[in-house]
Image: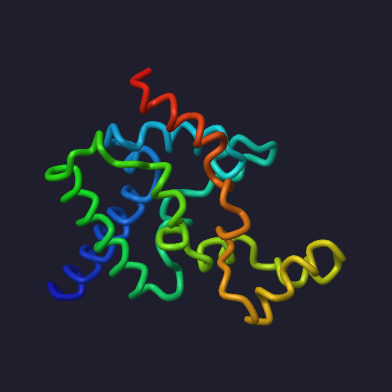
Amino acid sequence: MLVPTLVFASWVFTEMMVEQTAGESFCGGCHTMGPMVAAYRADIHGGAGEQGVKAKCTHCHIPHDNPVTYMIMKSRFGIHDAWAQLTYDLDSIDWQAKRSHSENYVFDSGCLQCHKDLQRASESSAVSFVAHRPYFLGTIESKCVTCHDRVGHKNLSERLATASMGE
């Protein structure tokens, strides 16, 4: 009886920790994330829309291909971020330059988790169909964020510029 109880308790604890470390209250705990959190909260994906839909940081910034990949990448990114907070000169990071590599840290599987019907919906709209057809056919290597690079963080460039000026 002890083993099943321990397994269950560890599963519940793990699930709680995954959930507690998924959103902006945790991710924004580092001062370097201030502009990103402010931009996220102002964006429709951060709950600023009329429907109140709110994505969490991990919905976009961790792959959702399968639970194993999710946990490995969440751990990997978490360890990297903790290490960076302890050892990097955070004021020297060029966040604008990092945005040009967003395909490395924004994952299509997260986008498609929420936008499940995108392919079907695109087929009913001529404009969307033309734009998304090559993606769904696999004839281009672009990712969602390649075209939708301003999604998730409203006016982030301006907020980063203000933060870099020390305001």
